[in-house]
Amino acid sequence: MQRVFSVIVVVLLALMMVTTEAGKNKKERGKSPKGTSDCTEWRYGNCVPNNGDCGVGVREGTCNDQTKKLKCKVPCNWKKEFGADCKYKFGSWGECDTTTGTKNRSGTLKKVLYNAECQTTIKVSKPCPPKTKTKAKGKKGKGKEN
Image 1 (cartoon, rainbow, N blue to C red):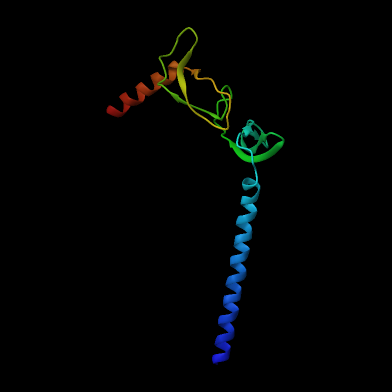
Image 2 (image 1 turned 120 degrees about the vertical axis):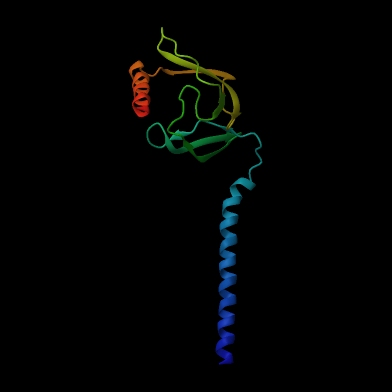
């Protein structure tokens, strides 16, 4: 009985050592390409979606004669005019301009990802809501009070 217990303990110890070594190898594999690079000034291109205009894609980085590809994601609600790598802080939407039928707002550059070329300020616009929609909302409110 004591021999069986001793054999089980030895087998468990050996199994733990093997799994620990396997875990170290996975970690080393992930770090080796990054750790061996002497480059400090990587230049990254835009994220290019694999399918369509948005979703998971690839971004290529270059430094001297080295290139690498990184996985990236283009949000499906991104504004194509200023890209997904330029982050802006926007003010409130302005009043509806009746001549153009649009509302405007401006944004100032908050964050630049992957050394992207971004404008310091941008203006965006969207269509004004239809007038019938605002009247319908007013009628709903009156109907609830009665």
